[in-house]
Structure formats: C-alpha cells, structure tokens
Length: 308
Length: 294
Image 1 (cartoon, rainbow over the protein chains, first blue to last red):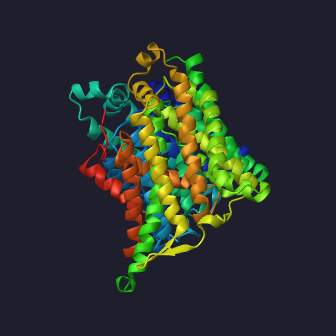
Image 2 (image 1 turned 135 degrees about the vertical axis):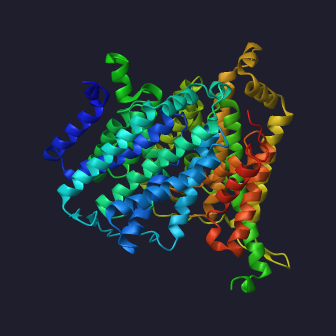
C-alpha cells in the first residue's frame, strides 16, 4: 500500500500513457511528453528552488543538438546518444548556472536569458549545427543495438519510459533531504544560509540537475522527430516552458505535465488555423495567468480539494 | 587573413556603426533602469515598444505621408500613451508581488504585441528612407561620415543627457528619486506616487519608441526586431547594473563600440561578444560595473 501511496501519481501517469495512444495521435503524445519532462525540469528550479531561469531552452537545445550530432556523425546507439546530450546539457548547466547564481532575483533571470541567447548565436554559426537548417534526418537507431526505434510503437514505449524515469527522478529529488534544503532556500535564502547550508552550492547542483533533465527532454525530442533546429535554443522556447509551468502550477509535481498538455495541444490545434495569432494567444495566457491565476490549474485544484 | 585588409576607413566606419548601435542600447537600458527603479519591474516589453516606434514611423510614412520629423515626436507620444494604458490596466496589480511576475507579465505583453504586428505586417523587413535633410555624408578628410549616423549618436546622447538632467537636477526628478527610495513616505508627503509611476512607465515606453524611430532608417523594420534586441539590452543592463543612469548610458555606448570593433577584427564573435563580456563581468564584479547589490 505504501508503494501505491508514494508513487500514486507515477502509477496514474503510467496508466494514462498506456491508454493514450489509443485515443490520441501517438506522435503528439510523444511531443507532449518531451515538453512535459522539460517543464518538470524547469519546475525543479522555479517551483522548488525559487530560481527563474529564463533561458532553459539552452539546455533543452544542447541536449537536442548534441544527441542529434552523436546519432548522425558518430552513429551511436540511441541510449548512448541520449547520454551525450544529457552530459552536454549538464556541463552547460554547470558553466551557465555557475555564472548566473552570482546574482539574485531578477538579474538571475536576465543572465540566464542572455547566456541562452549566446548559445543561440553559437548554434547559428557553429560548423556542426547546420545553421539555419539545423540537423535534419537524425536516425532513431537501434536501442542497445537490438531494438529498432524506427517503429513508432517501440519509440512510444521508449519515450514513455524516459519520461516516467525523469519524472520519478525529479519527484525523488524533491522528496529527498536535498530537496527539503532547496525548498528552504526558496522560502528564505538568508535563513537557509544562516543555518549553515552552502546555499550557492545547493543552487548550483539544482541547476545542473535541472539542465541535465532538460537536456534529456531535448535529446528525446530529437530522437522522436529526427531533427534539432534553432527553435530548440530560441528564447521563445524558454518562454514556452515558463508558460507551461505557470499554467499547470508552479511548485506542484503534476503542474508542468498538465501545463505541457494544454500548451502543446493548443499550439497543435491552432497553428494552422490562426497563424501569428498563436503568439498573441500565448501572450494573453501569460497575462491572464500572472494577473488572475498564479497558482495554475493543478495549484487551484490542490488549493480547493487538496489534502495537503 | 583579415587583418591585412582592414583600412582606417572601415575601422572608423565600424566604430561609428558601433556607436549607433550603442546609442540604441543606451536609450533602451536607460528606459529599463528608470522603469525598474520606480516600478521594480524589468520591462520585457521594452523591445516590443521599440519595435512599435519603428513601425509607427513606417506606417505613418507609407499610409499617411507623415514624415520622419513628425514621427520622431508622434511615435514616442503615442507609444507613451499606450505604455500608460498598459501600466494602469495590467502592471499596477503586480507591485506587491515578487519581481518575477512583472517580468513574466511584460513578456506576455511583448508576445501579444509581436504577434499582432506579425499578423498585419508579416516577418519580412521594411525599409525606411533616410530623411532628406540628413541624407548623404560629410567628408572629414580621414573618413566619410554618413550624416544620418552622426545624427543618431548626437540625438541619442542629447536625449540621455536630458533624461539625466531631469531626474538628477529638477524638482520632478527629486520626487521621482524620493518615490524610488521610499514610495510610502513620498506619498505621505502629498505626492501622487501612482501618477508618477504611470508617467514613468509612459516615459520609458516613449524613450523606447524614440529609439525605434531613430533606428528605422538604419535597420530592417520587422516585428522581431524588438525582442531580439531586448535580450542584448538585458546583458547590457546586467553588465552596467541598473543603479546609475549615466552608468547605463556609458555601458550601452561602450558595448556598442566593442561590438563594432569585434566586427572588424573577429566578425564571427560579433553577435556573442556582449554576452561574453557579461560572463566576464559576472566573474570579476558580480554586482555589475555601476551596480549596488541589495
């Protein structure tokens, strides 16, 4: 019983994922999963450490590009490709995070955004990123050299497992003593410091973990769709992940997932119909969310019916 | 080898171009600093307001036949009005919340503005002619100086210095500084702080639009121009810190020049050099060059 109580959300998600492909277009579900994982990683920082990274596309994109490069140029297996992507994102998170935590609050947001834009320009010019075209036709390869992922069902299972693994990891981090320290930093940084916690180090580790998982999301996206483009590192993508988290509920475990479903489905439905208005609609959601609905969907539900 | 082909003329040309870009950085980061000082909001919509200014000039000329000089007055006024509307309808509800919400809200506003302009004008660049009075160039002997670029630098500096004068040397500026320091006490002395806040945001928006009209003849006007620029301006603001007006102006100009010089000596890095400098400043002086870390 304790297992069920402890992992109830995870079990529910797994069950939902088992049913989803029969109800929805599997590729869309996979896209949602990649962005949901991305948003969960982002939420680890904003929701549980109180750090607004406005350049999280950098790590998503780094994972996307490096995995794409490993798969095409070095013909690695997908699990190794993912590892390269995650490693690159974590390393980038270490460097960028190390710089950004030197300033607090609003400056932190601006620094992360600016550093991400630097990576964007780098990707525009670097020899291996394909410039404006990005990396196209990245093969999915054979998992462990055995299972071909070119089959959409196999890929679906793979993406689901990656997502659930990432989700579980974040949940585990949040509930750990380490996660409790992160929350105390979010609530009152000075007090955490005075209690003897090396706040900067905690922040940096949280940042690297979040970047690595964001990189995993980006890497999985590249495998799923076979491309990595400048959009992956663009500030617009950074904004989207903020929006997803905000809509779903900052600082809730399930919020980013719900937010990703809402935003990705919305974009998918609207893209062909309304053109540029998508941007206006996203902007309007941002505004409404900040003004009237700061807890987000899951946050509101928890506040109204919640047990805790 | 690039170095061999660098002539004095091209060096000075890029230097001037850097000063021009630096002028835009200066005006925009000045506006950001003034708004942040009083409202505690980092105005992400600043780039979008700049873009609105440039488009106003283009629309006025293309559809209404209104020329550059009128636009230079009208665009800032109208965008300032728009800004005040945004402040009254949206921003004023956020002052008691965490600063981050201000950034998020204005980000949303910038998306709305950009999306609207994209719908009506597409993403292709629109040209804007240099006004007749400033067309052509002056031969200085050692270089040819395009008149319009010189005008941009002079006009920007004049506006920045004017702003500095108003804030630091006039009674209105004293109210503003008092309200920045302690809004409650200032209000208790009978000064209408909410009005001051509205006017300040409007003024910042107007500054951005002014820069937009100034920029119109030297850039391609597109709906994307604002949000692409604002990220660089954020880096400028991180480097300079938002505590000092003259600091913001000097940082903006200096970074423009450095960017221009990078274009001459190592063009590949010209789009990233500002961010690299930001990283270096964070390593050496985390509070920024003119910053006071609270």
